Length: 276
Image 1 (cartoon, rainbow, N blue to C red):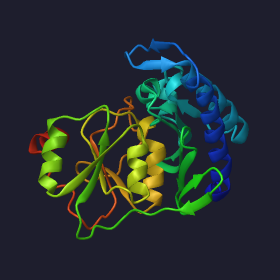
Image 2 (image 1 turned 60 degrees about the vertical axis):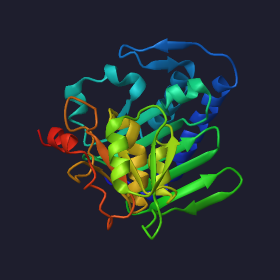
Image 3 (image 1 turned 90 degrees about the vertical axis):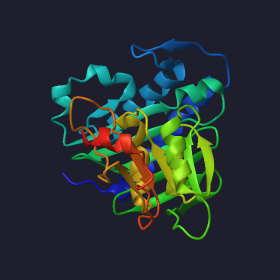
């Protein structure tokens, strides 16, 4: 069954915004922080957003299964690998940023077909900003009270490269890569906001040489690609979803202008690892 992604995008945006409201209810008061089995943090905001999104997507598209970070262990791998189409959700991406109360956390909802994110919504609750995109439809930025506008990646000109990176994860490989670019400006952001900055042309490249999961990136990947950019591994291959037992991504690059050489500065030992 084919879906009309243009018609599906607005209700999914509404679902993400409503999930953000539930997150802000917790954000505005004291809350407890627990640890999951992998020692990553969990709050009641994660769970409140998860419950809303799962219920709302279930009502919107009851025939499409849902994989959420907060219920992933309940889905057998053999079942998940048999899905041709599914929702991939991170109810609160950037829980560490949420705990720090710096506002840089998002709600991520992606529709995956085959192994490709074809629709994505990334909502920033504190700012009331929503990024969205769908294959064949385009990419957009909307803000409460200001309507919606199309977004597009930037082309490189005679200016420093704008590199966006993590507030929580850096390291010598990132430093080496950024140095190899020459003149540059570094922008620190949390969560999937980094990909969205590339999508809207506010940054040029986001190199990620550290661990991430597919639900961290799929929604924003759909936005970036719909805005004319790319999300690729270190060999230049598009990131895919649900290809195996692991939901971990390889190291990757988010790039705007495809005519610029983003790959020659990648540290050689990372390329050796990626080839292995």
